[in-house]
Amino acid sequence: MSATTEEFCRLANVEVPLICGAMYPCSNPELVGAVAAAGAMAIVQPLSLVYVHGRDFREGLKETQSLAGGKPIGFNAIIEKSAKAYENRMRQWIDISLEEGVRFFVTALGNPSWVVEKVHEVGGTVFHDVTELKWAKKAVDAGVDGLICVNKRAGGHAGTLSPEQLMEDLSPLGLPLVAAGGAGDETEYARLVNLGYGAVQMGTRFIATEECQVHKDYWDAIIKAKEDDIVLTERLSGVPVAVINTPLVQKVGTKAGPIARRLLKGRRTKHWMRTFYALKSLRELKNTIKKGVTYKDVWQAGKSVQGINAVEPAGEVVRRFAKAIQGTGP
Image (cartoon, rainbow, N blue to C red):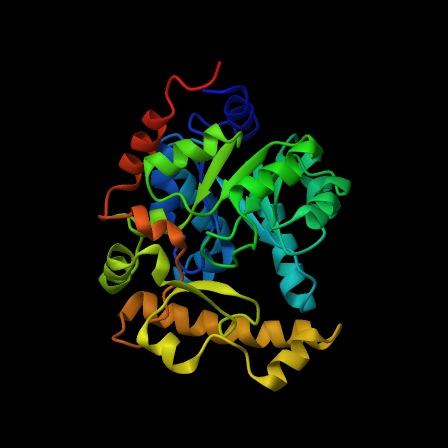
């Protein structure tokens, strides 16, 4: 491995410079545990763990750690200022995670300084999701240890810049960088590592695994899709989300309505509108993941679908990707 991948593995305490990113609603304990057991970092998404997969948070965390065979797992903290009750719950989840030995945290959508303070007190590590330089500088000022560089090929809330542009813009900051978006096969994974990234975060690739508890329709949609089938829609959360371009997406369009757009621009109302979208989409995604749907599917996925051709065991994905970068670096 290269010096950059070795640094990431040291910070995350893992063997493979790869992250299974947090996904709502796809991050079930079996998936997170299998990826971690294979030597990579896998991130617990608390809303998924509690509200989709029905675990008490502490017990679900312990279950995931058991499935990981004692190897480390991470925690996803979405810290955007919204409802006070949500913020309090997130703080409780972080405290429980620290009590249970979690030491790798991925923060998103807010100022991570208070998370950094808590995690650094016990010797842990915090990486923060960023899509461009201005957000990265704020994260650096907050004291994070590394950056998850979300590019325009990512699933979920994708960025607008290429992996190459993000590397050029953010590498002068001097922090470890993780590429997020576009890696569906070993070739793209190795290419991103060779660009200088310390690791690669993947989501869509791990949805199409045997341990991920989604309906077969979702797997089929990912396997059949090509990168040109991925579009951005504002209809799920109020900000662009990458999804597979199904008949329903084509029917309802990808833009928020005029009233919603106006509310999303307001300094105060944007949080209310995003909360409304989030609650609506979480309910719909929870239903579709369990029951399957017909032509009305709305499947979140990134352009990495181009390199995904089969549903495989999660551990096998990790091992295959690890082999792709063996012998790289000085």
